[in-house]
Image (cartoon, rainbow, N blue to C red):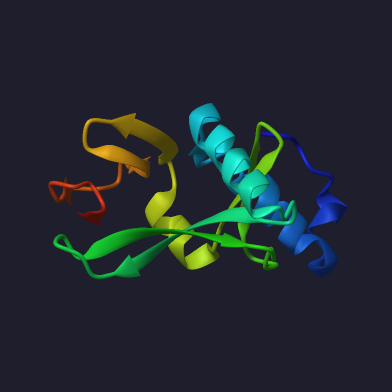
Amino acid sequence: METLDPNFWGSDNVAEVTEIIMQTEIEFTTQAANKVRQLIETEGNSDLKLRVFVTGGGCSGLSYGFTFDEEIAADDAVMHSQGVTMVVDSLSFQYLSGAQVDYKEDLQGSQFVVQNPQASSTCGCGNSFAI
């Protein structure tokens, strides 16, 4: 991680510091980024970013969600790969720290998937988890 000047921690720089710290803790794979780029090109809106979030619900208690968003909030974690951006809100980040966001195509279909080392259990489809 990069070393920051001690004076850097002023209130004007909190969001930038948060981004520097958080962006190294969730992996945004090349496969996922390439699929996001394809979807953005299909939509014709280069401002779109993949937003990954966690909500309550699902078989195991918590569920992963994926959507497109044009905005980046001040407290979002921001990851870049292959020229596209993935964002995670600060509440979801605690559940996704150390995770990998990937894109898989197999006999069951194609989807974004999360490999989460914090999950103590998952449902059969992999879309919900417990900590």
